[in-house]
Length: 312
Image 1: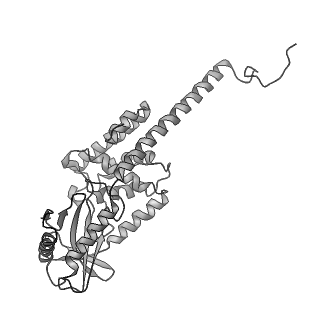
Image 2 (image 1 turned 90 degrees about the vertical axis):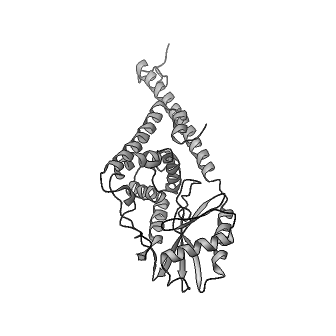
Image 3 (image 1 turned 90 degrees about the horizontal axis):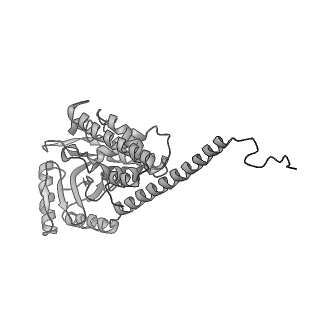
């Protein structure tokens, strides 16, 4: 006679409908896990590509630049990366790499920013005769084959640095470029090191936008700080990318205060709060956010590859 053991699946504890639902849920979890793994692998591969740059070569360029000036300058000169290299968010060909050349007790201190900038250009052209050197409104850019480096004249002032005013006619108020880098570094640490990779991928994704909607690297990094200051979600690059784009579409519409003191806002180039240009860029970022949602909804690695601007 049949016993009354309670271990069978048809023991009365679960109906056939419940069992079918449990099977479907289990299958869905397996599918979701597989999709998450595939996207994570895709993201890791893209980060690997982004990180393929020769750090030693960049360091070599820095030393070459120092030598181009060092033998003619009294006192000391140091190259302080205030841009993407220092904050490790550099993306080859996409980042603004601003290098503040700090002059301390040198013959150049009494010169105007325009005179110093012209001096930089002459020294670089003499040292690197076959490398393009361009003079901009505020900085001198030297275009090596693997990286462009902008040299922004800076004069030591107490705990800070003075850089050129926007018109280049005089030195600005004291700035603290180290403050922003410290803030970003601390926040990245609290995000288990995932913020910097998220920023790198964000820059790559945003590079697909039309030229008139491109954001500066400093602005992207400031938007990231804004988006993740109170973040409590999953500390994975994929989820942090989704969070950034979901929030940046609104943050872009309001100016962000510049913590380094380089300007009143990091995004003055976009104009005032809520203007047309900000709204247009916000809409573009919002579309990217929706594309991420749709890719997850369809569980499509192809769609994520398109978002990341890469190939499977």
